[in-house]
Image (tube, rainbow, N blue to C red; front, side, top):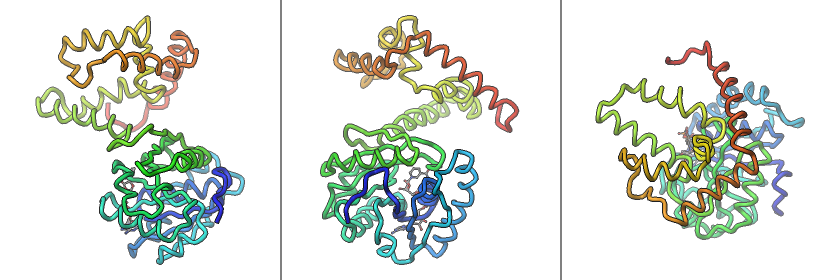
Length: 316
Ligand SMILES: NC(=O)c1ccc[n+]([C@@H]2O[C@H](COP(=O)([O-])OP(=O)(O)OC[C@H]3O[C@@H](n4cnc5c(N)ncnc54)[C@H](O)[C@@H]3O)[C@@H](O)[C@H]2O)c1
């Protein structure tokens, strides 16, 4: 079978139909892609339909593709049948390394080599996942955020044996179904977003251990503070706006004042090359937008977010 163009996929297989697999299935259906699904659990098919039921009204509000049809989903007890004719495969089995290595090898053994095989793993290295595959070159990680039908981010990561065409094709496919793909330059356990989340979770544990603040207050420190800004443009560009002279000045502050507070640790020493890449990267992201323009956009968007949150049943 020839691999279709990433924006011409008409049939995808979803292996494992729990929380994440069911959500991928709903998203693909909403983009007009037929889904062939499989799960060994006796409840697998019922779970799949439950998640599609939950996702579909959300997807309708976001806007369906003209040929979207939630009825174009088929469930197969036999995984091989689900893979038959699939032009892309998303694996969503439980986060157990040995299970995934074996399952991906089984899928790889019957799937034509030109078809991309993507794992939803939350943090395993693709080099490990592809270790038993005969065609490791087409295996990628496509790590979503829950719920994948609503949160745009998907991290696309290749292993040592993955070829660039598979990474590029997967990223193009995810963009086609409305995701915001993030291609890692190389693999690292936990990828980018979960490493950022882990850094914050480490501090929650630390602050709780020291009994500095209640859990509600630690949460408020994000939800009523930086979290509002992170929804708009991410932490690096947000820091760029924290100083009159941008990120260059902020890095000096971090290396100086923050260090005095004891907030910077050994591995956050900014050497000359890292400094250059952080400054150049932030300016590349700003892409000519001035500090004033970005600050204005931030402020206008914050008004909208605050208005949206007002009156919701949420902690203070
Ligand atoms: N839950 C999240 O927030 C989240 C977010 C991103 C990525 N992920 C990743 O997605 C994957 C699935 O997580 P989940 O939360 O949907 O788990 P889940 O427990 O809801 O679903 C897992 C499904 O896999 C099925 N399964 C068990 N053995 C299988 C096998 N051999 N072959 C195929 N299917 C099998 C189970 O019956 C179940 O339906 C994991 O790798 C997880 O790390 C989860």
